[in-house]
Amino acid sequence: MSKQFTVVEGGSVTTPKGFKAGGLHCGLKKTERHDLGVIVCEVPAAAAGVYTLNAFQAAPLRVTQESIAASGKLQAMLVNSGNANACTGKQGEDDARAMRAACAKAFGVAEHHVGVTSTGVIGELLPMGKVTAGIERLPEHVSEAGGDDFSQAILTTDLVKKETCVSLTVGGKTVHIAGAAKGSGMIHPNMATMLGFITTDANIDSANLQKLLSGVTDSTFNMITVDGDTSTNDMVVAMASGFAGNDPLTSAHPDWAAYESAFQYVAEYLAKAIARDGEGATKLIEVTVVGAVSDDAAKAIAKTVIGSSLVKSACFGADANWGRIIAAVGRAGQPVNTETVDIRLGDIVTLEQSRPVKFDEEKAAEYLKGDFVHIHVNLNMGSGKATGWGCDLTYDYVRINAAYRT
Figure 1 (tube, one colour):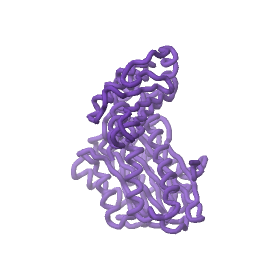
Figure 2 (cartoon, helix red, strand yellow):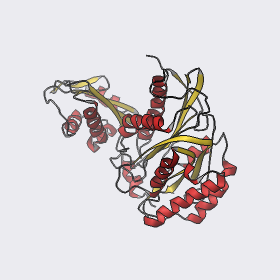
Figure 3 (cartoon, rainbow, N blue to C red):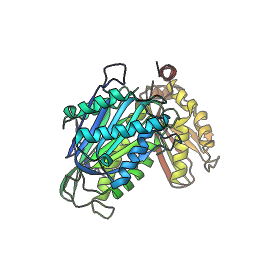
Figure 4 (cartoon, rainbow, N blue to C red):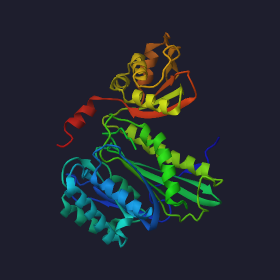
C-alpha cells in the first residue's frame, strides 16, 4: 500500500497551523549553544504525554502530568537542556513549578496550560536566576520560523538535530504532523535522556490523541536502545491545535488509518534518528524479529539483541559473529524453539534452522562496515513480529561518558 502522506521538506514543529517556537542561550550550558526553548500554540491545544518508567522520575515530568491532567490541554511546552532537574527533592519540584509559572506569565496563558521538561546532568539544582531571566526573554525569540532554534535548544550530547514533518488529507482538509526530538545517550525508553515533541493541526481531542501516542510509542520510541539505561527524564508530548478544521478524528473516522500511519512515520523517524545519533555511534542497527509466538515476545527479543553490548561491539568491529545474536535471542526470556531459528545479516544467511550456514566472511565484514546494518531473526514459531533500532558500541561512547560532567 502506498503512503497516504507527504514528507514536508524543511518542515518543523511550527509547520502545523497555530504553532510558534523558539530558543535561546540562558547560561545553563558552558558554550553559547541554545539551552532554553518553548513551543507555543495560539490556543490551548489538546495534549497527550508518555513518560519514563524509571522510579526516579524527574520533577518537571510530574509537573507536566499535573498540567495535562487538569484539562487535557497545553498551550506552551517549555524545555531546558544542560540540567535535568532530577533527584533534586522538594527544591527541584518548586523550581519546576516556578518555571511553569514564569512561562505562563511571559506568554499570558494559564499555568495549567504549561508543560515543563528538562534534560542534562542529574542531581544538580537549576540556577533559577538564569532560567527565569531566560524565560522572560523567550517571547521575543518565538516565531513561526523558530522551529530550528527550538530543535537546537533541546540538545545535549546530540551531534545533530532531529526533526521531521508530514502532511496528509483528512476529510478534505490538509493536516500536518511534525516532530522534534533529542537523545543520544542514556537511551532505553520504557514509556534516555530522550525527549520528543509532536505538533499537529488536526482536530483531535486529548483522549484520542493519548490513545494514539501511547500505541505508537510502543512500536517506535520504546523500540530503541543506545546503552540500556532508562533515563529519569524520558518524555514524549503531543499537542493538537485543531486549526486544520477537519471533522473530529476518532478511530471511527474514515481517515483514521491514514492519520495513524502518518503519526507513526513521524515517531519512527525521530526514534531512528535518536538511535543513529547514539553517543559515539558510527552506524544504525535495525533488528527485525519475525515468527515469534506474539508481538510482545518479538519486541522483547528484538530489544535484547539490539541492546547486547557484544552484538553492538561486533557490528562496530565488522565481525559477523552470529553467535552473539543467537545468544541474545536465547536469553530474552521469551519462548524459543532452539531447532528452528534463522538469522540473516542483510541478505547474508548465517544460520538456518539453528544450524550454521557457510557464508562469505569477507562479504559479511564489508556489509557490516556500512552505516546501516539489518539483522533479521526468524523464530519460525508464530506470527509475532517487531522491529527495534540501536547503534554500535564504540570507543567514543566510553570517552564521552567518562567525562560527561567535565
